[in-house]
Image (cartoon, rainbow over the protein chains, first blue to last red):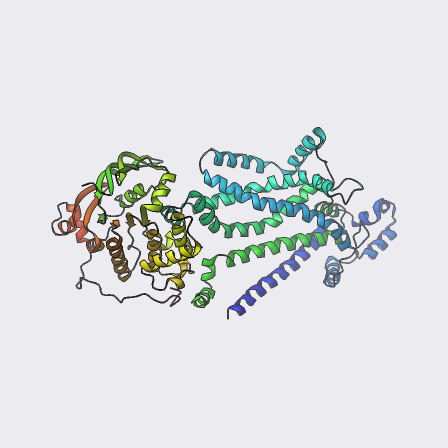
Length: 336
Length: 282
């Protein structure tokens, strides 16, 4: 009974997911073709300008750009379902190959940033609630507001100016020293500035989330009772309040994955970091349709997937919510 | 005779955006070892604030303007939260009006009682703590403690939650137990059971109980002495018989008259408790 319900539950979520990705791909396909620019430019380079109208027509036919958009979409979809996403106009190789070369870089930058935000935000939140209304809380809140208002590209430029140009401590761009791709310490040096920008840009929002949720929890009745039992402030905040703030924190953090990944796109561009972000920027600029499609759909899948996970966390993790869904009574009987 | 708790000329105010709000005005009383003192009065008369002032559980906007609080002859008026932690672990306990809200919804009741035992005896062995918790649960009238140990507050009825709260409160072996309207949110039969439970505890451990209620029926059942509060002041004190048979203050009379008259003056109820998991989960 319970099993069947959860099958239905996840089945529904899965169908929703597939439908969303389908709609997303159609929308991107159409919008990309609405935008001004010449896709032939990325394939043939400056030769395009010297082409005769006949040559142009032939080139368009070769790339399948002469047909109406919906026919183009259907043939793209047919190929995509079979795992063939076409070639990149600019790099002249399989799109997936181009992406797979860049993906680890972005995953590493985004993943590390996400992990840092995920771990530091609760620490700041707890610190603020511990001193709620006193100067450490106010100081953190004020500086956080100011820092989160600084645009990421500007902060990147300032950091490059200070640490790369003036102090010469850290490299200003790229992912590794030229010719030394396997040099791990070198790669880490290249990551410090981008990660700093992504983390400081996103941290405060989530830290406030934890702070406000925790502050709300400290005003509940169970805190009074825990106090009356003689529990210390540390035990009450860490064991009682944090536990109740965690479900909403986890679901927010699931939604935050695409936010933070999106943040890395901008930062990658500023730091010329060879990741998915710079690739997306190039593919949009050069009308590299096939590449752009896959990149957008990848990002879209990330967003939709994370939202779905957040939903599932919200509905499943909290014992109170769970209790309302018939599953609880069965579990209770199981204990006795 | 000096009591275990003495409150002398206590005044408490809250700072509000509109200025200072006086909640307690020059309140003085004392309670002896093993005595049940009822504080009666309507909502907003300052009964709860009085308890929370002694327990130091008031929000930061509240402050003691004047007066002294003595426990066993020791002045605790200026105690910090850290000092109070020690007192709350060993001398004072409190139970609350809404037992379901007083328990943390995401921690099992067994664990929440364990916390109270552990905080008082940090060096105690695991088994010993568990046994102590089971003992306390039995003491609070939970018949099958091993079964209830793992359940969460939302699995339990209000009465069971209140018993769990009482079990945790007893962990500190309190000399004074503040009961802030412990029966208000319960049904009539459970009310009587909880009242009798509190009476048993008082007799067994000679715990002084400060019983706060606006329900004069409950007060009559449990109290030795009654203190009637109105608008932050004590308007009348006396033995329970005197208060009920010869109320001096008109407000006391009104309170007594507020009890709905019922033909059968005593409530008969079945003994024992439901098995866990019955009905809609407790």
